[in-house]
Image (cartoon, rainbow, N blue to C red; front, side, top):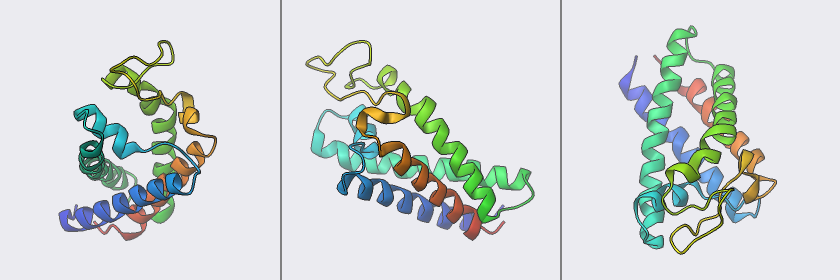
Length: 157
């Protein structure tokens, strides 16, 4: 394993993924803001949450890129299409399992079963994060496909 290649490609792919998700929100394709959701898990300060969330999302991206690199090693080496397959699996897991579970972990997010309170003001994402708009699953899948393609195409073991 090449640590320098992992660090560069992992950071690059995470920056691209984060930028694509931010652009999706700015273009009105989704109302979901993952860095904001992550940041509000740590702090109630909405302005600070954005910055903290970006840091958490970048760290998560590096951890996930390490998992991709490990999968490439087991799967016979990196290729763009292997990265795309992993990116699709990653996106499906995020949409079907991780994001819908956020209300159980998030101290400031309402759940589908209980509405908002004074503390739990963030809207729950719902299955496939569809509460944040019909374009949300599409933007998440495309961003994760690109994440995987960058890792698989540029990482050198």
